[in-house]
Image (cartoon, rainbow, N blue to C red; front, side):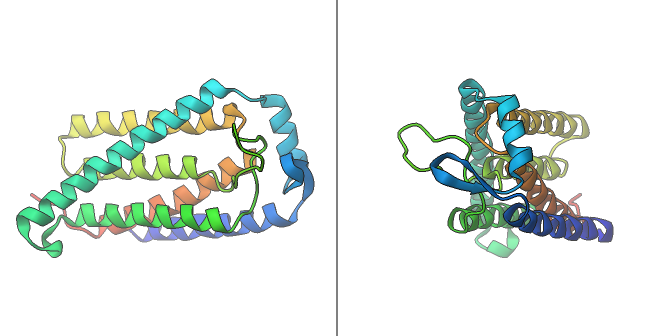
Length: 216
């Protein structure tokens, strides 16, 4: 538990440091709409090498919807327990902790929609100004939702079923992250930022989960 808490703190610190660097190092006007972008040399080199792949962008969008569906199912499970047991404190601790994890991810998603660090390297269809892109909220949300769900699955399913779910969710997460990189809709630093904050949240959640006694 302590090691995981330390890991969460380390990844949180790395995210903060990396974010400051993104805002201060190699900042140049290289994005659409005269948007300033940090680590401009690295980001533009990656953008030029990768290009834009709309099909991969759509795939990652669909995988994001699938992740949200998983979160909705788990939320419904928690609500069902609340209604049946007539007390929030009688809802499984695992589900309450998972709800806290998802709430934290939504907070950071909303925060960086307001506090803009970088803007996307491409304009969305029908828009005249680039959207905020750092950290990659898609990367963060899919990783947090699915890996968080996989960590909880081990407490509700048999060993083989839990392992299968974990592998499946990990695969979807990897495809989403790689697909997001190759789609060209994010700077490479956006993906790194999203991965760092997801890691911080997941290690913190795993540490909390270790403190919740497993049911017989």
